[in-house]
Image 1 (cartoon, rainbow, N blue to C red):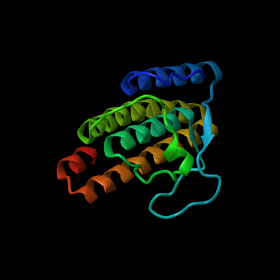
Image 2 (image 1 turned 30 degrees about the vertical axis):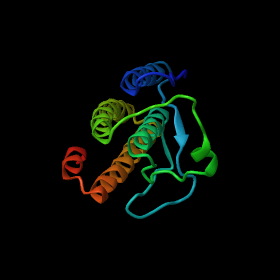
Image 3 (image 1 turned 90 degrees about the vertical axis):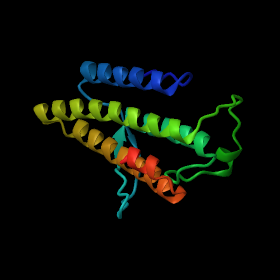
Length: 163
């Protein structure tokens, strides 16, 4: 599936979700990515697999978080290569815009996942159900990291918006 990497994230997300839906309708499955190959427990119990669209959206949100807050959310382990990478494009954002972006994109993804879960349940399709449940868990974990960061910054407005 071809993915657009340039442009406004709020333009890219609906296109990605539409292509993901078209892929599902054509192939009766979803593309999934391995998120965590091992067993992880605790508060952030990461799924083994998640839908490709959810992984892509969470990565895009992490990039936007890094731009808005000048560091990562703690969701991913960053290497020196990741820190030193220069995309060649200067991007700016602010934390309040990021919060609104996270809310809107999460709503879009959850609507999409709801539809896929309904289809998976109707057809008893375990791989699709597993990928969509993994996607929901991945989104929950990323939002948890964002809420923790907002709480650490002492910003009750952002915390209440994200919750």
